[in-house]
Image (cartoon, rainbow, N blue to C red; front, side, top):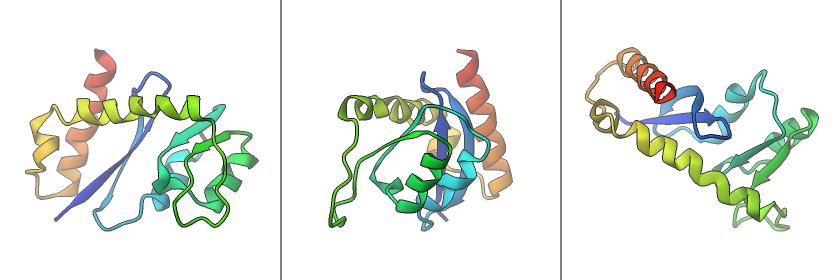
Length: 128
């Protein structure tokens, strides 16, 4: 059994929202759920979140989409390269979460137990 952790972080790389999905689920399907009620100036995400629907949702919320275009796009959409470099803060947040062995190895059989410890680990990251 594999799972994916989808994470919404603030500008400092602290977790704001967490969603757990099946390993074969596409990343883009979690984006709308994570962004409900979120206000900000922009969203920085990797190529997995490149879709016209997400870009439209962000435009309606007056947020800038800093998302690199997928290779299969016929007309690449330009993005702010300097802002995209700060995406590593999200990657660093994932690395901090993986310092918790229980999250990195996924020993828990039930999603509820794994999710509960994931929330606890996110709270501990906020306390640092």
